[in-house]
Amino acid sequence: MSTVRIDAARPDDDAGLRALLRVPVPGQVTLGFEREPAYFAADAILGERCETFVARDGDAVVGLVSAARRRLHVGGEVTECGYLSQLRVARSHEGRGLVALGLRAVRARLAETGVPGAYATVSKGNRAAEGVLLRRFGRGPAGFAPVAELWTLAYAATPVRPRWRQGELATATPDDLQEVADFLTRHGPQRQLYPAVGREGPLAGRPGLRVDDLVLARSRGALRGVVAVWDQSALRQTVVRGYGPALGRLKPWLDVGRRIRGGRALPAVGEPLRVASASLFTVAADDAAVASALIAAAVAAAARRGAHALALTLDAVDPLLRVARRRPHVAYGSQLVALPLADPEFVRRLEGTRFVDAGTL
Image 1 (cartoon, rainbow, N blue to C red):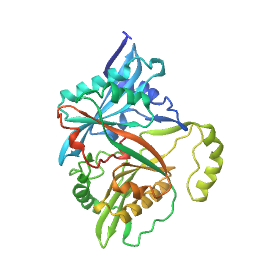
Image 2 (image 1 turned 30 degrees about the horizontal axis):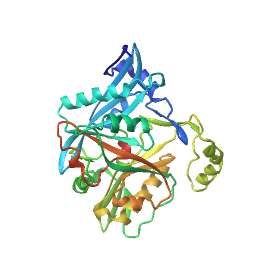
Image 3 (image 1 turned 60 degrees about the vertical axis):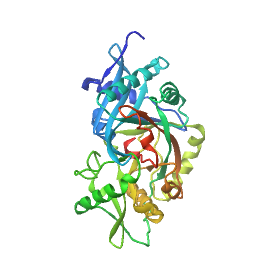
Image 4 (image 1 turned 60 degrees about the horizontal axis):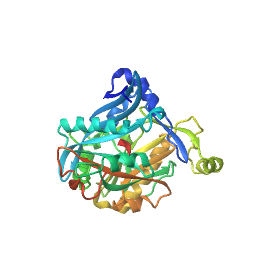
């Protein structure tokens, strides 16, 4: 343990960082989360400023954690928040306290820059992460605190044309961008942690997102909802490393059903699982009909882009979750945890419905 040290990642760590991310995460589907062809190229997805800390054993990278900073709406004000992610430890160094060391380094870095608070997500059943974040770092008023239950819904991407009798659905054009920015600025901040959409507009800070990835819902000419179908496969990928016994037996039949509906077969082991993200999902007055139509349109758009699935993340108390669940899906639960830093009231300020963008996780 004496040889392990924590410091900031360097450009020449790129290969070691990418190798660490490729370590498979077990489950019904064993997945590898990769950043190819370059680790640091995907930093902009996580936030405006992203710093990665690594654990080194000699010259080898054996652990990593990232801290990004984002401008989000908290308690009615635009606030710079920290977002912690990509906790990884090489199997050879598990159980040696590297996660705790990395988190201390990240917390100290964010604290010294005056960030009011930070947050992270923990997948349900990830006992190791829960143990570190909530038990070891969750003691006392200055520790991590659970603030929300999240659900990520994965929809099979199928090209079924959506129907919405009350209005029209269309992809955005450059002429729509200012109207979209105004709409998001007006309706988005009703949820905590909603991103601040500045003068640069909704595409800024979302590498690879194009104007025609924005799906708009209008009723009588007025904009009523927006969702962006964000494909990040050029910067980071999810690769199937194995199927569990039950799913492996069912896969041929599932593939037939997906093809009949116009979707893609599930990838073979070693191939990428392309999951587009339903980003910036915003609906005026939480209108259920608008939300349902937007989700259907986003699923069809994801299919046209060659994705296997579309992912949407919502707070368990979000009224739109009930609408989103009506469409067939696979659900994944997680917990949103928050850490006060410069602002001891940061966690309290997060009361209400939280917004977490599937594309920025």
